[in-house]
Length: 305
Ligand code: G3H
Ligand code: 13P
Ligand code: ZN
Image (tube, rainbow, N blue to C red):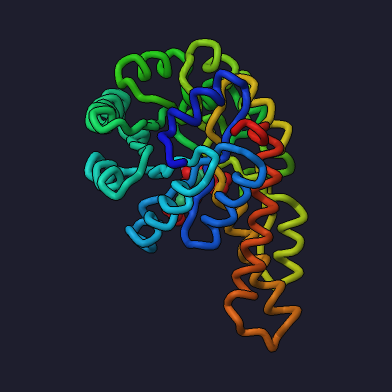
């Protein structure tokens, strides 16, 4: 069933488990996400960025909405990194049940102002809202507190921000970054900061940049002819720990991008005579489903629907 983000995330925060918010850009990605959720009885969030909306538009949103409506587990359609009030409103008109307003690059007061406008409009239509405070970016364990404080989310500010905006869930900067290069070795995330923010707040918290960039997928990508440098993602144990302290929405895009390309590369490499798109994209869908299943296991959302 198609539900709001709050319907999925409030129980997740209370029950100390995480829900994957997977980015989609086409039908196969959407199927890998929603069919796996259905098979594992897991709630799930499917998100489209503004780039995904530009690429797939209402056609793609309708595929998500149709699969979500027919699913017997809760599914939300979420706008990822909405850049303006107009963008959030457009997504709501398209049928999204959850929107993000990302004004985190603006000064604190302006972020509050922009977020509050979106919250007022979205709530009037029964839609829930994600906002962001702090700046995403990789950090290293040993850097001094002042440097961390310069861009990671300040716990006291988070409390003030939530009170003044009425946002339903909050993305916090904890040292993660987007993409396949999140740091050397095991990228560091600031668990102490998550715990502190978790103690001071009660709404669901959101972790962006949460792909694991599994070594096995990176290796298969290379074996299929792909070129990739020192890729590294967030360790499974680190994500699991974060869900014990307030992180309820866990954003994953890069892992699905890698997995789909791995599937395509392997079919083309192993069966050079193949040109049936169902064989090519079908394999991509299978590899993506393994990523979704793994993440749901790590986050503890299996069997929660
Ligand atoms: O946070 C960014 C997501 O990975 C979406 O990326 O804007 O290229 O669709 P995109
Ligand atoms: P990854 O690049 O780690 O998959 O993060 C995606 C994300 O945060 C989308 O908003
Ligand atoms: Zn993000």
